[in-house]
Amino acid sequence: MITGVQPKLLVSFDDEGNLQLDSYQAELMGLTEKHINWKLVRENDGLTKQSEKVMWIEFSNDGRFKERYDEIGLNRSLIMSPFNDYFTWQTTTVTEILEHSNEYVKFKTNNSIYTLSKLNGDGNKK
Image (cartoon, rainbow, N blue to C red):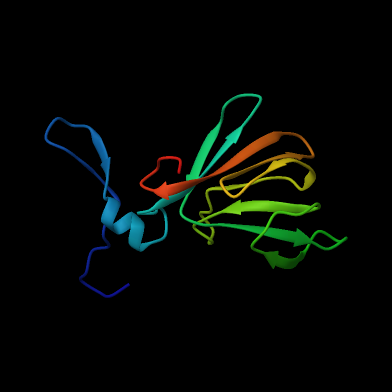
């Protein structure tokens, strides 16, 4: 840190005393994203996650990263951006692909069933 310079705070209080996030600083740090292109919904409880980008990753037998893919496949895990320490969500490995189209994919993992939908960039389904 530079001497005499205060670090930028990510949160502050508005005029009514409500806590608010500095969205500009959060986006610069990779904590939030401006464009939402993907929506993931977990079937059993409706948990919903959204992100700008997605990727599929495969692990080796010892649990280390092996390969990155743009498409779903068996034994791959979905990871949702941002692709840093603050990623949105990661699934366990895919065990079965239930449905697949250009707009969405429904898949089963080791412990859940998910539907991943492609959005049009403003958070709405295509």
